[in-house]
Image 1 (cartoon, rainbow, N blue to C red):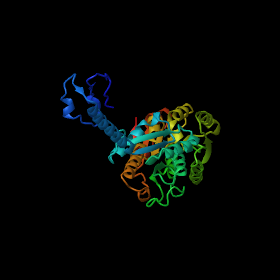
Image 2: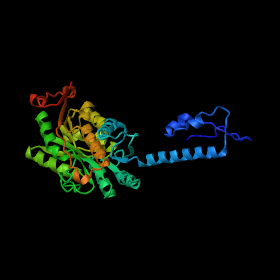
Image 3: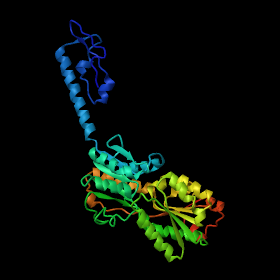
Image 4: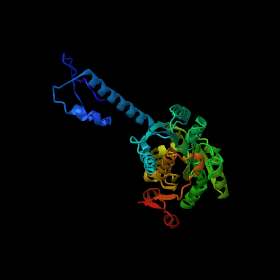
Length: 369
């Protein structure tokens, strides 16, 4: 604040006046020329001093009011902050497209569950208690479920892999109703397609392992979808379950015993955060891996098929900004990805002794060599 008195000294004839113009500018306070015109050593009487102090206090109250009026977004994520920096950047990009820049005209309160889904309800309740203007629920179904249960009034913008209508999140994709809307990644619906691509890549494989997270409420529906697809192709499915780093190690250690010739990783935020661990273990056991995200293939996985995760986060940011600008979540249709990316790592294929069929290479959006 403007300080009058860094060096206040009492004098019989008056009080010495010291002004910090840099601080005044930061407060948006224009110091009157009549005061600036005073020469060093000039005296000011008590009435003039009190008038100046009154102006400073008014300016400070105005600044505090502006700060309090800045909208706040609650960012609720199942993930850990480290590996998902690019996704957060995409969210901020979406916000900026609606006129909001973090720290300038919007504040963001981040809450990270770090893969521990049981922490999400408390984190969501904390954001509700802080009366944020909108909650961006990211990291799949566990996050949006926690947000939905925490509030029926604060708008929630989600990204999820489940069918939001079947899961009871919205009334319909076109007219969500209620206080939720967002983007569906169609992760569950894409599992049979991923299985099809994986069996096309390794047609000789008869046993396929499916890794799911038992802590994810969407796991059981995914298992049922994959079981139907596997049965239709005359293949055998082995379901592996892991909800922690140690459980991932234990689950993948059984691949050889199960004689699994390929591994299909279920769409799950926790697995996305542990992609390097999963790729390293699959490589150790020489098992081809199909995942949902491009980042896993970049880390050394064999193949992925799914929407662009940064693109999803960008759209969530756009919707959050539109709601801050006055839009109602009930009127914003649930978005679906416009396209899906097929990514193949030829280096990994060579290491595994696999030849990628031309039918897959011709459809690939990205080939890593």
